[in-house]
Image 1 (cartoon, one colour):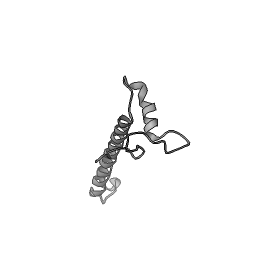
Image 2 (tube, rainbow, N blue to C red):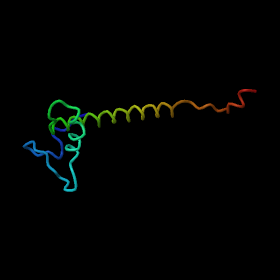
Image 3 (spheres, rainbow, N blue to C red):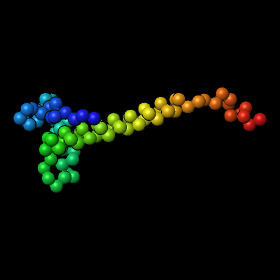
Image 4 (cartoon, rainbow, N blue to C red):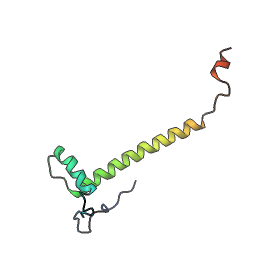
Length: 87
């Protein structure tokens, strides 16, 4: 999965743009969530990488699920109900 060169809400000079007047951006929320677990000050780039990684993780889980469902749908079905086979 290709990652963007910078998050959509980051300006060319690297400053995080607050594009929602109602509240913090996803970058700011990510920093607020993970900062208590870090020994160093997290940056917008750190948050962007975290977001890209978690999106990639869930994309992979989704891909695996789709592959599993496809395999299961391609399995031959048993034409006889189980009760008929017991006789």
